[in-house]
Image 1 (tube, one colour):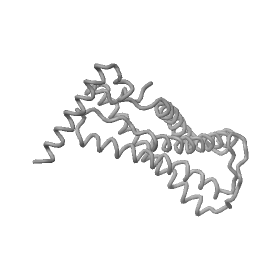
Image 2 (image 1 turned 180 degrees about the vertical axis):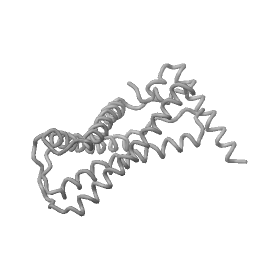
Image 3 (image 1 turned 30 degrees about the horizontal axis):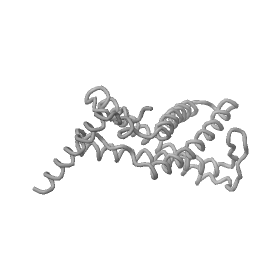
Image 4 (image 1 turned 120 degrees about the horizontal axis):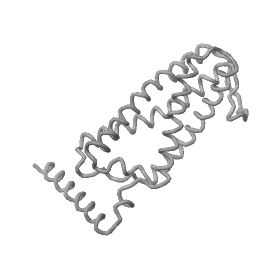
Length: 201
């Protein structure tokens, strides 16, 4: 009995905060992500889509100069994404995300949190597994033409292992992104509850 009453009180309090924010013209600041978080989100989203497109395109190319150039670009963007992920997680740790609307069911909030967590995990697994696969391929890795320290060796078994992880995690990442976009469409076009607007400037 106590728990349902507490949940009802929480929803009422949240609604009151939204009404108060609207009244005093501060809703945009209280219930939106900070601009660095928004900028990191969209920059990383763009780079992830480029990475996935490159990966799918490269897989069909025969060995040659074009494939080598695209692989080098793929690696460089992956390293950039790893750096941006660290920055984004650091920013998120010190800046709490805005609350969900009180009208959003608890199960949807849990699902959104689980999907976001999984996205972070696989956005980490992707560049790390790719880098390790490259490290044990016998080839040196460069960052937009700048040679990086080489500490690996030519180890086909390790290269194959990390390559398999890289490919499998990319498939999982595509599924997670699809679920994320489906939720975006639901909130933007059907529920229209303001969830999507939180991630815009």
